[in-house]
Image: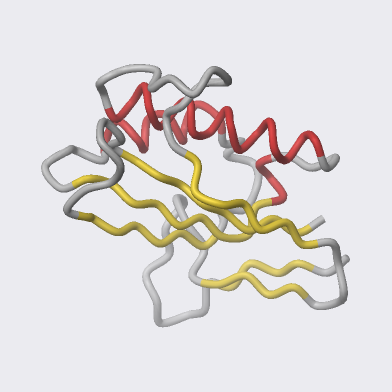
Length: 129
């Protein structure tokens, strides 16, 4: 499978994200709906963005493993963070699960007015294996 991470000359290069990801040939694609800080019992894991982000990443890993994939197969993240909360905690949670040796995916972050009551973050993703 051909997956290329695009960071062309003339654009800022960041170790945290790729500007685009190209999938060159047909491949299995997994579209993961928004995951938040809810555990297997449907309970919010904690009141902080860091705790909820860490749980959202665990949920993503669970989904991916069920299909024989891992976080490194993600080509795009879309992250919604409730206004007024520092995304630094979410970045720290991401750094704990992302292997820096893997090329980073394309990432879009939105600051939103609110999510469901108690939720501070929601992450959806597209993975290609």
